[in-house]
Length: 66
Image (cartoon, rainbow, N blue to C red; front, side, top):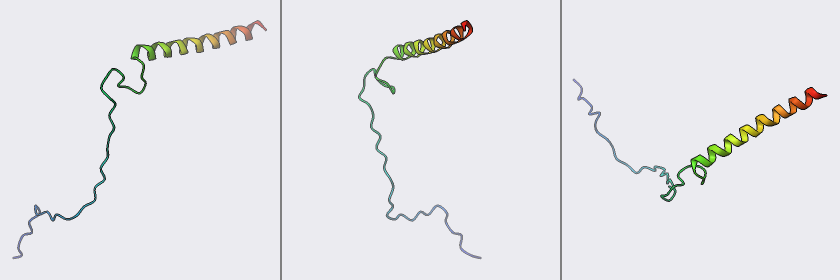
């Protein structure tokens, strides 16, 4: 009978592991991608969408008058 190998034996040797440093933003209100409050980003997006829709409606209105 062969001696059973111990699977829990770990051979420790020199290893090179990559360390990832994560830079965290300073604590405060600006925790997201942009330094503006969330309500400002939502408002600016809403205005952009409204202007885009208004521009498309204006183009169709102008095209239908010709």
